[in-house]
Length: 247
Image 1: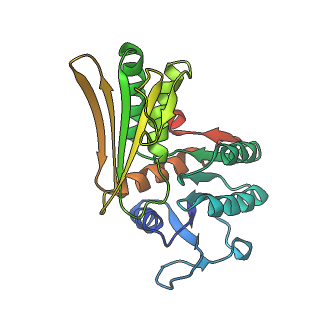
Image 2: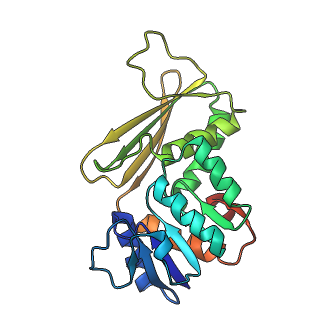
């Protein structure tokens, strides 16, 4: 399997390239990034229009702007694409859905199997603990751009869907002078150091609370998940796929 890594010089892009290198029956044939650092073992294109090597699949760990540039190229060349980038707006997600009508796209805010299993668990808990106050706390390294994390929103959406979409997301309470309502999910972002990613969902009841936490200590988890997604989507029909489809 020939892989193109979009965002190949970023932290995650480098980890993906390494994991592909040690995997069997696959290879990184080229990468795309805004600068060619010159220290990769494969060609790096600084402009999507210059790509002259045809991959079997694209793995994208970049930023939304760069994702759409590679999606445009992938549509023209009908190359299955795994999007692991986060921080898309609602309108941008609609654009991705339109692209998926033309070629297969795998999109997940988090490529960890366990975090997606956690999303299923808290979905059931939200139904059983329907009178609880729900709070999400997410912690990431100090270089992460988007807040809240895509994973925090994935977890919130999982519970909100189970609760008929009635919940509102509260990102910042410092400007409010009113008590908490039962129809909100609080989402809090912490940025510092080299934390890879930690997500906690807390259900607060009367005189007790239940907390579910997933802590990732290595980016390799996400890279391996992206590689599994690439294998999964390689021969799929056009459409938008997620971790739920693979799990």
